[in-house]
Image 1 (tube, rainbow, N blue to C red):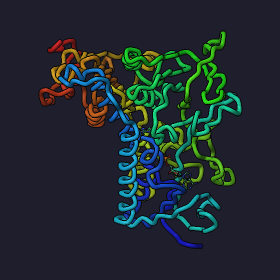
Image 2 (image 1 turned 90 degrees about the horizontal axis):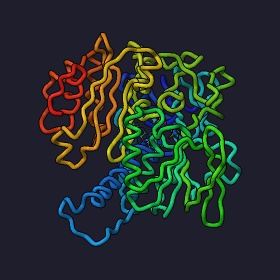
Image 3 (image 1 turned 180 degrees about the vertical axis):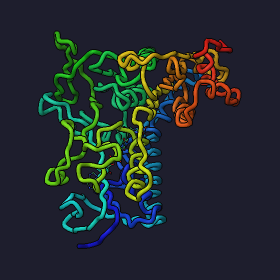
Length: 467
Ligand SMILES: Cc1cc2nc3c(=O)[nH]c(=O)nc-3n(C[C@H](O)[C@H](O)[C@H](O)COP(=O)(O)OP(=O)(O)OC[C@H]3O[C@@H](n4cnc5c(N)ncnc54)[C@H](O)[C@@H]3O)c2cc1C
């Protein structure tokens, strides 16, 4: 046995590294096994680098669309996408290094290599064995490969890419077909469009952002269409094939019907993710996975083996770094014997960091109708918000969904610049069991976008002021 710890976490992404640090903070001896770089998908290939690219794309599209109104005079606009990518990699290096420093600061042992369960208390890492009283599985997920689209449909990193290649390639393809219009698909579409690519966005569902509020999705789709992005909804992927230097994609109406082909320089597959649960030694311990490969856990994040917990994308819950980190915190605290946190996955905000940003938290209207939960709507258009008008970004709204009788905050859906920054007001108010009255009684600084939340809360009672 090479070492012995109270807690070994396998996977050093936002779920795993947060769990490992929290366990150490709580006085437990803690180790984290990571096969690649610390920080996982979020820091290396997802939220962080993609966030930088989206920020640059937002600036470029602002200048392209509103430059003249801003008094900027230019003939044509030259952009160099590689500068954005280079900056994104610098930010990645800094943050990944930061996790290493945090490990040293809090006394977490970093074990480099590929970990698997040798038995219920032993983690094997490339031949070495480590004993653990508790184990947290946090191995994340990988992009979904499309099924039955032909062997040629495999990601080759050149003509057929997924997020991991898309986020580091230093040139934007002249034309690209993005398959899958979830958050990752719409974000890449936004970035590549801003940098001049001809973008076709293909989605099997009847709206882009299929999990989100329909008004948010439709609003973003309108913006996309205005900017020249071709949006093909209700379209199922049938085949992906390389044709010389190009790639051909066959799609067909999701409801059945005649197929058609599209061609582009590149295809970016954004078809969701698949948990990294195989090859981990789970079956021999009776740890169950769902048909999609997610490790099945109870409310306290425990697997079938009570001292082995699982967090983050591996569990198939909401695939967000914020969710993974919260699960990591909760897992470490449960192990340390603190009162277990009950996580409400529905109330975790999800954002598409486009321009404008689309943000949703809680129930959508469609879900409330399906569940027969009576609700009221408060809506405020950004056309009545001074800050948004000043920013020239008044094409959006804040929509608040509230229980008809009890006034409980059920959901908030926003299409606005910096919508992500507005979401914490809702989640905090809900955490404190606030009602719309709390949202409009709290004084909001003026002029700010957050005033639109207060106005939407007023609108729940039919007394909106500024529109
Ligand atoms: C393009 C993109 C953009 C995104 N943007 C956002 C965003 O803006 N906001 C947001 O909240 N979320 C975002 N996400 C989602 C977010 O990145 C993930 O939800 C998050 O990284 C999940 O964290 P995790 O710790 O569960 O897993 P991961 O981040 O996947 O980390 C798992 C780690 O485990 C390691 N590992 C796997 N198997 C083993 C093994 N057997 N032994 C040792 N190590 C192993 C992997 O190398 C990896 O480092 C984005 C994702 C993508 C792809």
